[in-house]
View 1 (cartoon, protein in one colour):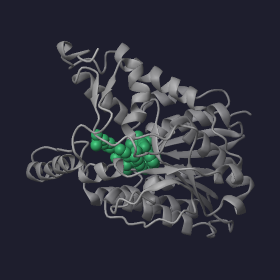
View 2 (view 1 turned 60 degrees about the horizontal axis):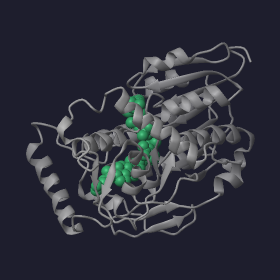
View 3 (view 1 turned 30 degrees about the vertical axis):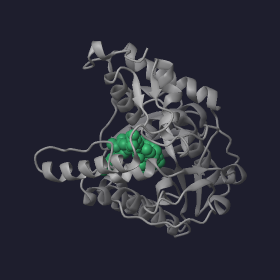
Length: 380
Ligand SMILES: NC(=O)c1ccc[n+]([C@@H]2O[C@H](COP(=O)([O-])OP(=O)(O)OC[C@H]3O[C@@H](n4cnc5c(N)ncnc54)[C@H](O)[C@@H]3O)[C@@H](O)[C@H]2O)c1
Ligand SMILES: CC(C)CCC[C@@H](C)[C@H]1CC[C@H]2[C@@H]3[C@H](O)C=C4C[C@@H](O)CC[C@]4(C)[C@H]3CC[C@]12C
């Protein structure tokens, strides 16, 4: 295919963790596109260099919460993959900002699809549109039809649920030119892989404590995880098949899954950290749950006191503790049945790629700096 003769895809949030994997995935595996528009608030200039003879990668700086920006980016495009979002469960940004980006931003994408006559939209949702809920109900290897008490209070899951609803309701509406809009929604569980910001933080924290991770969560609580490459692959397939079988995929939701093992959040992280010499201390939580909960509450209090002076947003708060302490795993084949999804990366390869990346944090010295040499290897 020569540049200009294929389809134009827009990837909102294309410079983020998932978005940048998706852009690379599209370049490598989607043969009928000639342009990828990477729309983001903060541009990653290195993506520009990915353009080749066949596909032009165009970086577009814009704000999803401004309709004019979105309209301009979508003009003349064929399909949108909407991953842009404010991912915040720590109170780093005000709730109103989360709503503005995640809900108004999605409204803008839908409006722009309508006005610019873009027929297809794949939305990146989240497991959190379902749960875990605040009652602590476990969702054990459930699927898209599993009944669950859905209850949202926190700004991020609330915004993702609202946005997903808007996306699904828009399936089938008339767009400019008289054609129909087709939409579907993908719900990843906790994504991991190269570039995962939270993994960097756990790695850095582990270096400070001499490569020791102190078990805080019950190993019996399963937390769903999915490799970023497989999430990107699933988006690519959904985008392709939405155009071929719009009546099958249109208006549907799909959990993102692969063959990553069912483990607790900490044990899963250890799959990678142990390759760097990290050890997990304790076979059961070292701190009783009520103490952890008190600590989480203390963090909320400190956040409130320090508000206006500094942004105090530690990893542990009552909500993140509840998410990490409630089983939420998926087991489904809906995406396989509807659009032939099979993970592109087996667990062993996903693990190896992630380990290589975690190790590279040490080689580059990025995570080693600031760490007291003396504290290293206290466990070895
Ligand atoms: N990381 C996870 O574990 C996870 C799990 C489930 C779902 N998700 C969803 O996947 C998507 C991608 O998440 P991620 O982890 O890659 O997050 P990320 O923060 O790395 O990427 C989000 C991107 O959106 C961009 N963005 C934010 N505000 C914007 C705005 N106003 N205008 C334009 N762009 C804006 C950011 O600059 C960033 O590049 C999100 O929709 C998120 O809700 C993530
Ligand atoms: C108590 C501590 C020792 C551990 C705290 C870990 C906690 C910060 C982690 C655990 C689970 C994580 C969430 C989960 O993987 C899935 C998602 C969905 C996604 O849409 C946004 C990110 C989020 C909420 C992860 C955030 C970090 C969590 C809560």
